[in-house]
Amino acid sequence: MSVLSPTISKLYTPPTCTLEVTAKASPLSRWTRTPTIKSLQFLLSFDSLAQRARDSVEIYGDETQLSALTETVTQYIQTVLASRPTDLPLFPSEQTDSPVPSPEDSGAVALRPRSLLTHELLLGNLATAQSGPSLVLKASQLYDLATALEDCTADLQQLPSVIAAERPVVMPFLRSAALVLLTVGLGTATWRLFQTGPIAVNTSSPSSTTAMAPSATPAPSALPPVPSAPPRALNLPSIQLPTRSSNPLAAAPSAQKDVASSERSASTGSTAGASRPTKNTQPSQTVASAPEVRGATQDANEQQIVASAPSSNSMERSRALTQSAKSAPDPQVAARQSTLFDTIPQVAEVRDYVASRWQPASPPPKTLEYRVTVNGDGSLGAVEPLGVSAQQYLGQVPLPQTSGAFVSAPAAGSRPSIRMLLHQDGTVQTFLDTTGQ
Amino acid sequence: MDSSVNAIATVHPLADARQWGGPVASPDGDQLDNIKTQLDLVLLCLEALTGLGSDAMLQAASELGVQDMVGDRVALWRLRQSNPIRRGTGGRKKLDIEEARSLVLISCHLAQNHHATIRRAVCLLEDLTEQNRPPHQAALLGDYLDQFTNLYQERMEDDHQTPATLTDLGLKLLIDLLFYSAPQGVRRLWMALLDRSR
Image 1 (cartoon, each protein chain N blue to C red):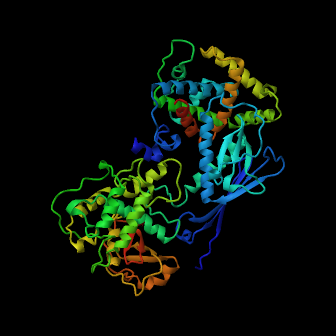
Image 2 (tube, helix red, strand yellow):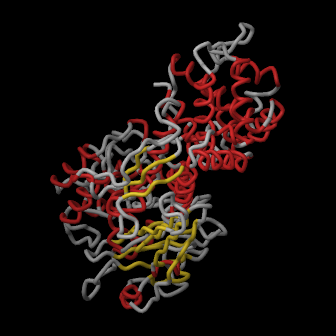
Image 3 (tube, rainbow over the protein chains, first blue to last red):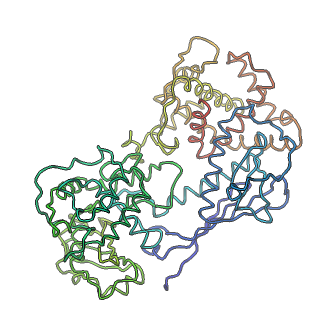
């Protein structure tokens, strides 16, 4: 890949320590509003520690270790705050400087109090020859450490995987297209959980249906009730099918199982989250969430994303839900089922258009991603390949000539930008990037 | 409540779940009693260290948009008088969750405003302790502890406390106040109140 990966670096400098976080900007950053990062590393320097008056002690690690350290410090501070005045002495008692962690904890970071004002940070797998197995921090140093870690966490949560959404914006993906597939698949699988009885589209892959069903416990109030009216054929897109028919949209059963197993592993009692955000909504099922950026608590920012992304065209989505619920178990119709991401009709129409024509001479090496802009009259405005592979396959993507007939005209004054994924198995996924208003 | 939490741009400070560490647990009666005491003591600590009074607290309430809970001196006095160990029988003894959260917001707001003083006091305490010297030897700490002890004995009906135990209490509150003065202070204080009240 010829795209450069510049390094992003941020310093957090409270009075007694310095936290430096570096990461590489993902090539996708070129098409996102804020940097998309990977390979995060941190360097933490402690100044003027009690036992090392003039030396600064440094520890370093990766994103996982940073997250573990942050969580440990946060929880420990809460424990200290909950303690009583008599729990700890003002002056530390005499004790050795080198505690011996238990073997099973040898890799884990931990904190323990020595007195009201001093705390021992057991470094675990962060320990170096310079640092030794533990450091003694004063209360003010602990405060500074927590401040740096929490500021860093807050900044990481602002990266493009979590976007404050005044409008339904598709989140750029932090890692590879495989992660994109997983995220979108989770949302689709969750949506499919609420397809029941004769209305259900996924009928010919019992394993995937069974796999998905037990993995979520939807809140009854989270979705409109599935109507029991006789099904009727509707011209709706679908992004998944259990069987491969003449419809190139049909997904392989293995893909379905992958989605189902991913959904099982990632979702714990999630609701559809589409029509109504709740505090139990799993962020991973929304397009807007960052799978690897997790706050310790529910982040209202994420909740707003859940609220805003699906609800911006709630009537349209409700219509789509109702329509899809009424569709006959006709493979042709089943192949074109609406998804949670069809926030405007053009999203589904682009998908329909491409999916019915997408027949690459050879399967692409990875999922291809494009940004498709629709003109105000519904014609194709522009196609932007995202990534080298997408560029290479651009000629094979079945799109009309610019200004040729493509989809229906979008809302007046808008030129929506639609993100399109062409998967190696031939399936096509689309979601709204921007409304372009 | 969910819709108000999600509308970040217009959320009431009491409704912003991010500040409180997630969905707010509602303490029961006994827990609430303990919370009232703890809240009153945090404000007492601020008063003793910084000399701020009810004006500053009311100003903070106004800045935070919780003046409907703490609108004037009488309202503030009543809320603090809900502390079960306070002297006097004239004040009301009730404090509901929203009022408690208002006091949390006010306390942390004031702590943030006086972060420099709080940090200086804690650093002085750390230095003296390292040298095995008593905290009263630093003027800031000595004045703080004297004032804290006086206010406590004046306001609280608690004969179990000695000067030594009040010193311990005052120092613990001072150190806690440092952590409450951080941007995450509201969440920390609220969670600490809930944890200590169990």
